[in-house]
Image (cartoon, rainbow, N blue to C red):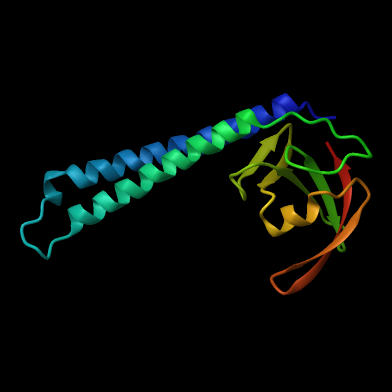
Amino acid sequence: MINKEALLDSIIDELRKIHQLALDATQRAIDQATDKEAIARSKYETFGLEASYLAHGQAVRVSECEADILAYRKLPRLVYTEDSSINQGALVTLVNQDDVESTFFIGPSAGGVKVTHQDLVFSLITPSAPLGKAIIGQQLGDEFELNLAGKKQQYEIIDVQ
């Protein structure tokens, strides 16, 4: 059984790394936008303007990262049993029709981020993602089909924590 607090700490640590990368990228973009070489010498030189747009976009990304971290900090710590319906906060292991196992943490945001915790590598998914929608409300042992990229995939839920 995985310690949920430690698991969430690992997720938040990974989100902090992403946040730091976004902060660094924002600073680089600001530096480029304010560099004396970015000053336009004619109306056709747009490097400074483009760099300022990039800096703005990076700043928005920083805000999104901060919101992701806050959302995971506020996530309720639910304990799942064999009879529990899956919802946000669940660590779910699936096996597909090819006997390939995959583990996912259903969280409020940051879908697609990969996290390593105690040698377990898993992906964050959200309830709005196709796989998240298919898993929400299911229980341990349930089977379901999902059409991904035009291909039917069959899954069985083999573990929920």
